[in-house]
Amino acid sequence: MSRGADTALAAYVSELLVETEGAAVPEPPAPAMDATSAQQAEPSSVAPAPAPVPAVGPDALAVWRLPVPGGVDLALDAGAVDRELEPSPVDANGAAGIRIGTVAVEGRSLPLVDPARLLRPDAPEPTPARWLLCADLGLVLRVDATAEPAALERAAVVWRGAGGARPWLAGTAPTARCALIDPDGLAASLP
Image (cartoon, rainbow, N blue to C red):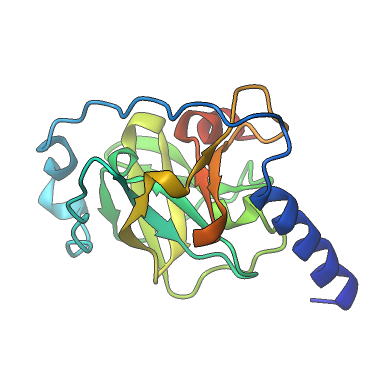
């Protein structure tokens, strides 16, 4: 990356980690989730078991931490991830922005999304990569192989309100250098 691109990325990351859209809003309620729903899958379509989601208490959030080159990670509510998939052929028709193509999953054609491109449109393809199925959102995430479940302290999160310039952004955790993805906002922002 050029020096100018490095400077632009650093400025963008700094802006992302500083709440500038007014006062923090209360944390949205956690979605109810059936403990077995994330484990229901056809054995032929399931990759080796991903790392277990950590047990968290009332002061923490269970998330998938998604590394992004450039120093800030993304995090997605662990309840939005159904399971890990084995990578399969990608149809690149309709690829644009964070959508890198479509993949066939259990007879459905779902968008394959690279969330790193939310922060870095020029993000290199993660090699190796993990694929995470988010069935309720109707998409598959292609993330760096080092992505893993983690706990994030609720007190560290500055929640954002609706109507911001980045509908995919639920909040930021500046001390953890992490931006939390709003799953519905991510799905709605697909081209």
